[in-house]
Image 1 (cartoon, one colour):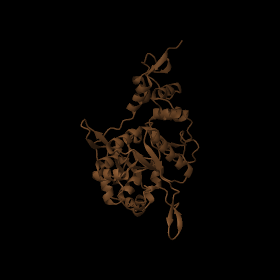
Image 2 (tube, one colour):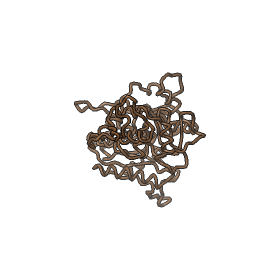
Image 3 (tube, helix red, strand yellow):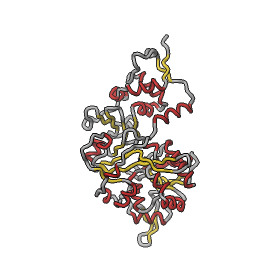
Image 4 (spheres, helix red, strand yellow):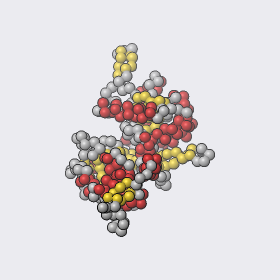
Length: 380
């Protein structure tokens, strides 16, 4: 009778280190997009969204992956977790059982049958949290960012770009892989909040993310790129300004609510319209791991009301579903959340009842004047 293999933290690290990404790809039967794929850099139909028509799943040589349709990413074990909907230990067991990873031959238990370590649920959760921590980064790219016509085209002024810490990073010779992946993109600096023992808040640089300027770059390298060790589902864009800028705090408390939008450009456009009570979730998904950031906002500002203003998008039903999921999550956590109504009607003395034109599909496509008008009407 074979002895059962107990997977502890040490073995889990070894399993992670020995995962073969391409064996995992084959085991999951991911349909490869040959024209877009390169050697050791593959695109395919997402295993998280198998009904998609355009390949949105990208995996690199080191096993790091990102699914653009679900806006999720991570390492090989995180992908297994998403597929089998289990904790990190069971993901490690799955990797061994399916031959996509191995343990060292020197391990006395290597011939056993994999068994997850019996731990309490709270301990499992604690271990999973350890896998997702955003550590501060030392370099500050805002010192070398410049204003760009793309920002101007989107209605984001140079003053707003400087305030937020965003701009264009020009190509240049560098040995830094992290810096190189941000080049020739519009880059946003991502800052979090540190609280010391005296409850004083300070901003801390956690990452930078870059947006491609054209479709060719989006197709070959991805529309958005960030540092591989950055977990966006732990953070909220612009939370530092919301909590540390006196004017932003004042606006939030006067409005009695915080706006939650999808992306950095949406938040930037609102800030440019002098609507400062806004944060962004890095996509149309509010993750449970972002709840602690919202609780920090509640504790600091005394505000528990949130307006979810996600993109209208081209697939109306799907986008509304994402917005509703965010609302449900917030309400289940004791907050008060409601959604922006893209179908609302406005009374016009000249034209009667009018709606938001179909050509506007996200907050960033409104003019500053229109955004201010929506604010004055109490709609945002």
